[in-house]
Image 1: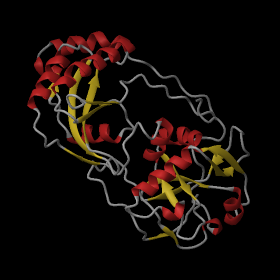
Image 2 (image 1 turned 90 degrees about the horizontal axis):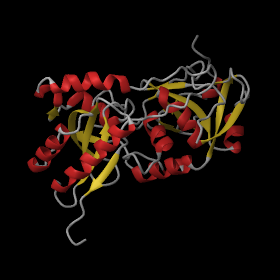
Image 3 (image 1 turned 120 degrees about the horizontal axis):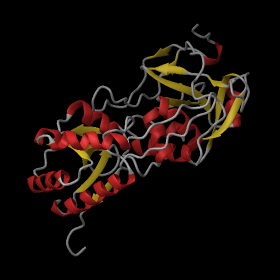
Image 4 (image 1 turned 30 degrees about the vertical axis):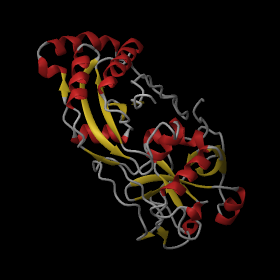
Length: 328
């Protein structure tokens, strides 16, 4: 399947992600034994993004020449363990052509559900579609919903699937009653959307979502409660008591990062008539392999903000990666 993934073949890459979510990988341990608290994966860096190398089968493990320990983990579990710290995985780096890298943004899609997140790379722009009635209705309803601080918007064109309008929700309070109130507000507002136009929401507090990252960097609010007078500041003061606090993780264990943000959701107005995280090896990959990479083929760069990583693919190793030294 890796050989079918070539630049522009986003359908093949999506099939690879689906297979990875339902299968296992052999993670290469630079230090420690499987399941030990001090276990560390190896790591490599390509174009400023970090990856933990792994292989896709016992046969590939033998072919790689790896002579240290390894750990067999499901694709879903390793995705949940690595993406919070922005680590991806690199499949079969020993293979001809250098293998294939899966960046952390796509590990996040595997961890949270491939059908819940758009397939990248994403083309993100200001919406060109004129729907003033919907924006006015949305702003009016948002003003009646105290949990909402501001609203932003973007037009999202995924690599696969239909484009859609994304509404960024900046909330004072992410408690369950507030999230339910925001969801009800969106359901009331969606009646003003033209027939068949997909509209999705994204929490602006989501530090991992590429659409939220783009909105924070590039989009000004089209509704801002605090620009409408002192009411917003009092709402902010009242909501501070509801903000959640995360405790520290235990050493050697990947913490479960439960979220209470407003979940992403998609509404489409139809035409009329019509598990626990992986807790084995450390999530912090170990020493960096000083593998040199020759220029390789790449997917086209997204038009999103520069802070949103894009997908590097297929750099060619200049020599056998198992024979090089380590930095430091």
